[in-house]
Length: 262
Image (cartoon, rainbow, N blue to C red; front, side, top):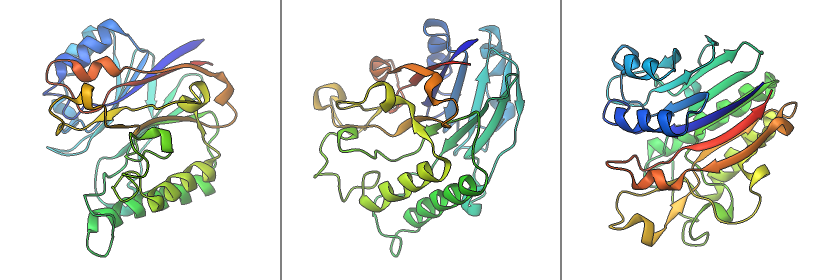
């Protein structure tokens, strides 16, 4: 039976409860994975989401920072979490559907502003986080699995507005892209979005700093949907909801969608 999945860095689920509810009402994905919830789990506005049909939740949270949640219309079971790089952050949670598919929801550290771990500890944390993701999936090969989230890296030249201008900007530096690709290769993950939309510029994030984000269009594709090779061919209908960036008091990220016939 097919299901549609969306991933969205919401940048505070309580502040943007109305936006989440709007997406649930207008787009109605079967499963919605949120990152940067910035809330303990008990303070997520679950009653509103349950009233819209999202009766199941698996989440990890912390006050004011990070936080990941999987909201579902379909039954899901908690499949655990991993504290990659031992940061003590709520950045990963997984859930399993009744058909045995496991969904990993990840929020990779942004990495600060300077792409040098010697002077910027946050950049080192980001690289360490990705290295531990690589090692995990190298030794525990994913099967019937989907990995989504704000991975905070735009890997391809056409995933950013200007490849050359961003080569020294965190999220598109060669060392980050190498780490990103190493995680993909370790799990033989397939990039579902680019499988469906192989050519052309694609963005899922636009900075708050731009006076007119739409006119400037200096975006990056930081949000991803991957699938293990055994189910990658079941994925289709990928799309990025750019108009959401223009909603009232928006997140700087927009939702990314894919449908799976499983």
